[in-house]
Image 1 (cartoon, rainbow, N blue to C red):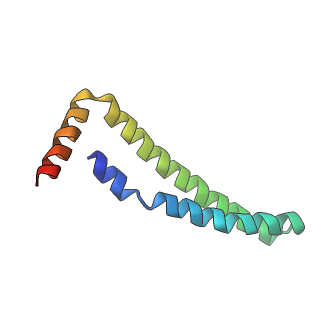
Image 2 (tube, rainbow, N blue to C red):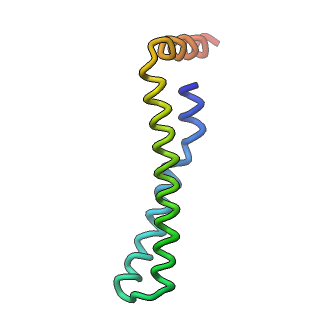
Length: 86
């Protein structure tokens, strides 16, 4: 389960990088010209960042919950060991 959580969420670093690439020019534009349009663009970018942060936090919480259970840790170890043997 742990591995599937990680693999399913491999895209988050790329999404974060895309948001960063998007946000800096928007902030630069806003500092040079404050307008309703520029404020709206920054607001949309912030909303995307907040949504990504929430998704990443959920993954982090799930991983922490898995790591807290000794039985889950043993099961992950046995699953990984079985995969290596195949």
